[in-house]
Length: 335
Ligand SMILES: Nc1ncnc2c1ncn2[C@@H]1O[C@H](COP(=O)(O)OP(=O)(O)OP(=O)(O)O)[C@@H](O)[C@H]1O
Ligand SMILES: [Mg+2]
Image (cartoon, rainbow, N blue to C red; front, side, top):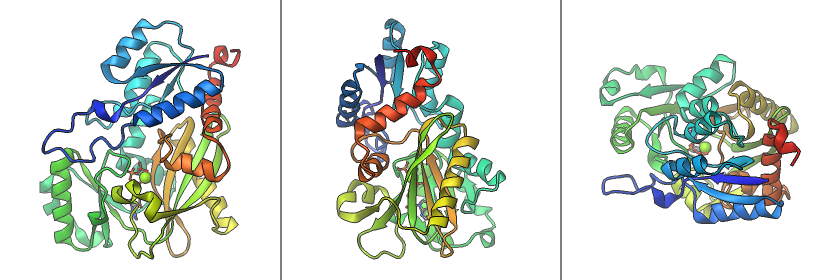
């Protein structure tokens, strides 16, 4: 097949003075684009780089024989719906693509909205509130929340704005962290109760009958009471984190996590792939933290690390995602 690759490179985002240094963390590296290209080529496909932004628009309008677009584009601008930009254009042009539809991508990048939808379906998630602006901080009923609290930008990924110091132990600390986040990231802040205990991330692949690829424990190498898989830790994961996959949690706990993950994937309308994060409390009850319908597919991404530990090569992972998408498009299956 002729496979178009839609992506946004880190260096397409101008990091201007005053802008947080992690602002381009969601965007992909040339290394990741090359890795996916190599995997697609090794599967026998011809790969066409479409890029992102207006370059993508130009390319997609001028090339007529693309069979499917492999989409890893994060989208442009500080918009909670930015990940939906490329799939929306592709739907408008009637071009097949991998991954979740615009509605799903827009919802999932909005962490509080996602939690609200899931909580309404009985999925357990830490208690949270939204801080829209600094004034909101003066009208909060703090007694209703259990400290410590985690403060995070409401519409980001890759731990943008999430540091070891994002955990607040009292009202003054919360106010300081929230003010700094609101000013730096220009968006709402979500305050969430901190869940002590093990962290796991869950990979899902598939369309009509999605399957859990694996459940991976994320364990700090050094004993750590208040572990956060923060941006600093993600950047230095080789020295700071041990990954346990398959997870050694008890079978019944793993089954519960699997069921909740698949239910979440279906409720949110995900397709082809996703990665979900949970924290477990003392009784091993999983608390949903967030879902990534557009998970990283580079060598340093959790889904790829998980696949590696399970003996699934990168090209196989890419093949699973592409084959899952092709189920929706009969003309792709025939190629
Ligand atoms: N309520 C919480 N309790 C405990 N730890 C938390 C909580 N919320 C976030 N964390 C920690 O912060 C990390 C990053 O948070 P989160 O997954 O929400 O960010 P993200 O930017 O969406 O991540 P990703 O890189 O997976 O896209 C989590 O992996 C977890 O270690
Ligand atoms: Mg996460």
